[in-house]
Length: 338
Image (cartoon, rainbow, N blue to C red; front, side):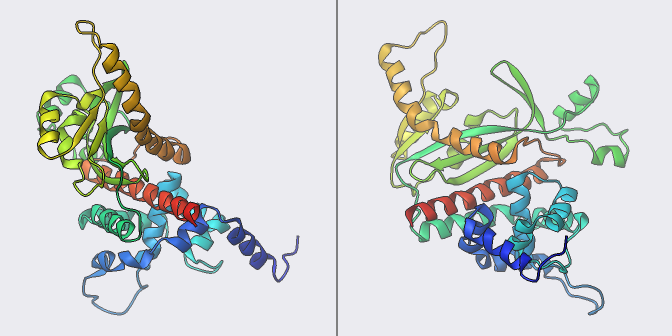
């Protein structure tokens, strides 16, 4: 088949008219807002002008967002940029543009980790949202989602040493680099999971993630409860499931002027009254909105198992997922209000 002179331009025009996710992300997200924060990655003196210049930091950030939205590995990301016109259009790449390879993509994410930039970029975008009419309103919801990692095949003695914070000394450097000694086991609904948790705080009005914390799966959700609360939310209602309900938390919330709407626990020894059951039903109608957030991340990306090693790398990957969700959510809200 012979390609016509205007075939590619017509295809790109069709993509733009379709107003799909990537078209909205490209046009509505203020990408240049992040340049100053990201430029620190290249802040080192070049010994000479020889060699290729590094890829633009905004282009690389866009690649990180693409990778997070579609849950692609570095090798898959390189291939998809070369293969998909929608990805090329999003990145402003022509067919003859040099495409970052998998190693370059990995290296950029590694530098995000070393400079601890992801949380700062996330908060910078949240500031932009608030400044442009998407303030946190009508209260907040706190919950945590389990993020699994590949199960480590260790002996009992090795696992015991890892839990004590002393990985086996007889491990070689290569073996140690492939072992995730930060991930932990947890149990939910009588099922066992191994990995981390994405603790998030979402505002009720817009379903935007306002803050998050990443921690090992064995840590109880309520241990990071206070760190996630947003005093700037226009509503003082705080919604959370029964895992967060304790006398200490209720007292702490009330002392800060919040109104706790925490699910009541049901147990064999002390059954819930009809009044508390009704409260649970009422609270859950609002609290379930955070499940929509976690569900949206899972629906687009499919299997969310992390392939990174260690807590710091998990924070980068999960933080980018949360940022990608917020960008996608902002585009939806912006087009809906328009």
